Length: 346
Ligand SMILES: Nc1ncnc2c1ncn2[C@@H]1O[C@H](COP(=O)(O)OC(=O)CCCC[C@@H]2CCSS2)[C@@H](O)[C@H]1O
Image (cartoon, rainbow, N blue to C red; front, side, top):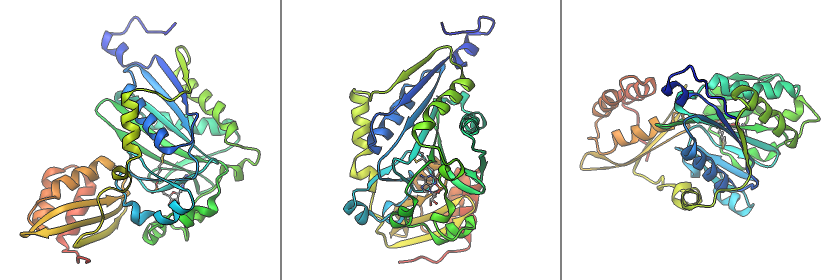
């Protein structure tokens, strides 16, 4: 029986997590798996926490706002059977193969708690003999090298936190498919995309992806409760799922609007890189696209909306951002940059 504490008010009970759901995907197709993840966010009840484990074969996953053409070698990927996928969260491009395991936490927004979620991953790793830590903006590392990239999204109702776990991936292909900005590597203090990452197998040689599932699920249940736990391992089969799959597999979602434009600007900040592409018509910014690997994907979308159509004057653009986002340090940085009158590239 689910343990609903009687002494609390109805609202408190409503918000408490009393049910846990363990979901494992049986397929390795990133569009199917990402569609399922979003499906879970739309189906998460107010009193439950969901833990989803999934794997993709030979895939590059770009962040919500990235320019896929610039971030990866699309033609080479097509030729070599590497699938391009785009997720709903911000951050940069990552490579997945069957040596990589993905986890997702889907919880009601009020129960979203990064420390708690990360503790699940860190304690499962401890049980497997790996001492890891959370560093930088979104990385899990062992001995200073990254084996997990994390990304987040908060909607009105739920929080999504997902991440990778490199266990036994073929990292030598990373530089083959990913074009990582040299400025980004410099900001991380590494020489190449491959030298920044490490497989967990290096820290625990007997580890395999298979051996990760049970300890991760056990750590999740230990944290969120095992009283009312259910398991799922078959894909949904309804209109909502079919619509989500259609979106995640569409060319429009994957490649977006063309990055071709008359004028472009580029700059890397501590919180991520930004590229603005736009045309200028009747002295106004037209058809603006903002590409970025910033973690806050929603903020980048909102900035794009705010700047598009404004008169093309640096001061006006800076003011528009400051007015719309008075509390956001990232938007303050963009406004300060605009006031330096950055040079446009053709
Ligand atoms: N699989 C994987 N895991 C960890 N780090 C990776 C991986 N592939 C590449 N990289 C390294 O991370 C940087 C990008 O780091 P950056 O910090 O820019 O982006 C991320 O970490 C995003 C994580 C997204 C996690 C999602 C969870 C489910 S779907 S994908 C890249 O240039 C490589 O150096």
